[in-house]
Length: 314
Ligand code: NAP
Picture (cartoon, helix red, strand yellow):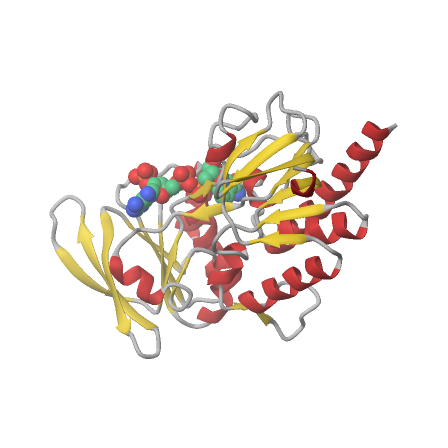
């Protein structure tokens, strides 16, 4: 039992999780990171990351995450590529986290399970994901300089991404399945006034096509949601902005979540409603969702966990 007991268990292995591990490791806390099966988080499906400070020439997403991981290892964190499938946080002392049949215990827990971008789920999407198909305009918009792109969705994210993309793309078409929008009025009006943005209602993407060999998107087939008619729509990039799902299923009923499922933390901090349990990165941030902000909050969570453990000792 003692060998499976840690000062801190970190659940998740994106920028928030590994940064937390670097800090708890350096603070001499016995640290376990439950990395999940596909470690590294959302950056593993991104190609080049150009906006992570410290890499003026840019860096490939997977390489950046390997660097994070190696730095966490350097400071003594134990990393396990297993998926946490049960967490007992409420009323548990120590906290218990079970992964693939083994239960680990800890005096503090940092949750960094991230959020998953929703995708359309059509087969051709997988072929071009990370090439011409992206769920992050901030990450990939730059690669579409002078090109024609489209954004799918009718919420604030879709409008924000469409507006952002006009900095690079020559034309941005917002594709939405209805003609009313969840997005705030001001966002819609801003897009309507932008000469580079065209709004195309009553369509859904039925298929994405292009050159499979080079992974270049050349267009999409759009299905009219009222008539069922199919049309070809040439574009070079497709941005999916139909929402994110925070990965909080494990904590439902234990931690306070907001109405969209994100973990509630004390403003400006990473503390959850359970003392000793902290949340960092996209699992508690529906606003910024950047690797650098996730890493920053991972650092905060580690420092808060360290202080919590210190205060418990005294
Ligand atoms: P959202 O508000 O849930 O909107 C998702 C959009 O995607 C909806 O228009 C929805 O269409 C569409 N959609 C969902 N599934 C689809 C599918 N399978 N195929 C086609 N379209 C689909 O998500 P969000 O825009 O990511 O926003 C999430 C939260 O973050 C919101 O509370 C938002 O206000 C907030 N946010 C705020 C800002 C800001 O204030 N600057 C920026 C971004 C996000 P239907 O409408 O037809 O269901």
